Length: 435
Image (cartoon, rainbow, N blue to C red; front, side, top):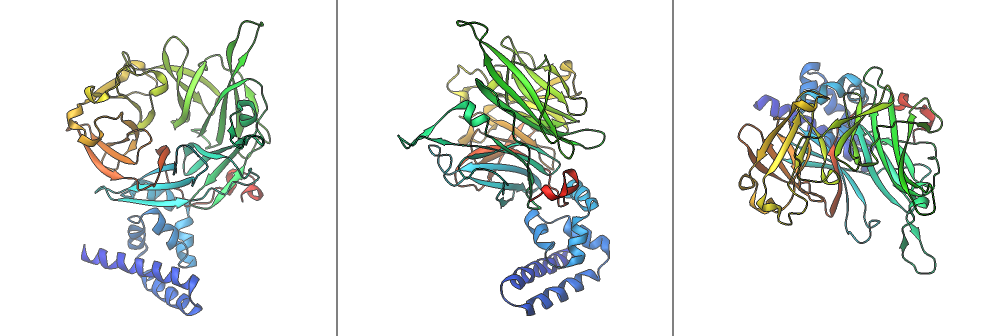
């Protein structure tokens, strides 16, 4: 262990020299090269083992030390090996400093949770090409290191000086991008199709299970008026394949629920949303390859309404939490049910774990708990809505442990799993469209 620690310290010294070489003098570049050359004398397996223990921000800095390290860390083999062996669990989050003005200090972070509960955060700024200056950017999906970002304009009234909410104007002028935040790559997708009487637009992002094609899905929920006194809700689907389509394609699917809720979760070549068809809640599963969907029943007897249920992936399986009746104002009196689908697509395979409120940290017992992803030790990572607090649930001991906070400074508006990728995805789309 002491030898490994010494080698790890040597790596860190190379990182420090690399940073100094960019800001002080060319002489430090020689020192950095000398230090990295010393490390390079080690067996490649040892060097790889050290890199696999580093957090994301250190890997990014390592790529700047020398050409050989950049080549090693940019290889797709390293990314796939890192995902399997890193001691960290990664999530992506966005936050706002204030609730009243969502344009105030919008920030994005990749948050890593170590095996011992240590938290490391890496900020990133999504440089969205061809986007309007004013607006709110949201993360609408995560898949294999890529993020789907949507920027919605804020329309300002010239006469009153306050923000105006006009659904058609906002949804018809959204900017959709796909980004690899670790590589600084971002592409802007073609303009979305225009529609009238829009109620909501829900996004999803996933890849096919066979040839790894990436696709962005839009579910447009709008009102139609068959007569002057009647109205009904119609949901239409739009899809775009990166690297192939130059415009959004429409698809028809009668199984789309009349209401769907963000955000879509990618798993097994499908994107999943919680939906509500006015009679009961369902999971709408969209096959990214076949471009058609079907509905999966939710677990029986859920107390929460579909719009208050969050989907996640726990140990490679769909899961959700039921925090009790929506009419119950004090959730501290209700236990939390964690439901897991043991066999994908089988409604009969839903199984339940119960988290007693007494097993939840005392300062979090008054809040619902939403699932996020799987920790490296197999525990389920959860968080209260719009909160910085992170909690783990051990299904063996049925206990919850507070891991700390994500160290953001405002209200968390998005929190979801993230799989890091240190490889350029320019081949996914036309190379000249990456900014």
